[in-house]
Length: 212
Image 1 (cartoon, rainbow, N blue to C red):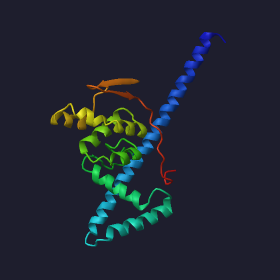
Image 2: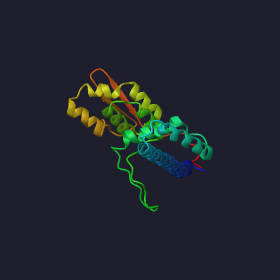
Image 3: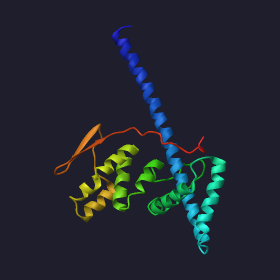
Image 4: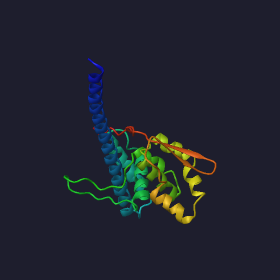
């Protein structure tokens, strides 16, 4: 086999590999988004049920414990009382800003929730709304893994960028994020700092045993 034939075969192989990798990435993203949407809806149902029984102070704790026992028995791990409380908090935090609607089986769900559950668990720890929105936008636009999201947060990226902006500029950060050119590596220079942004392929997050 001459060099030209080897190059053709290599190119052929790479095309097939790229196609399979894209398909795998799409499947993982679809599963993650479906799981996040499901948790969002579970949080909504829990909150509504608690509000219906709000005249009883212990009602919320009671239904969470009972629901946890039933779901854990049927679906396995992932439905502890703590996890169910996180789902409720997830709905409370993101319910107002999302445009979620359930359509027919032949149509896709419309959702602004585009990150994995692990991403949102981390984002919910950020109390500042504008800061939380900024990191959510950046994670979506730049395909940040959970590890990269944590790293960027630990460098206080938002706070350093916000220091150079007025109220209008800070609001734009929370609505649009930092405008970053696509590429393997782009630098955004501050007065004394240089921030590095890299493209990361999303990694599958661990899912509950009920997803088969």
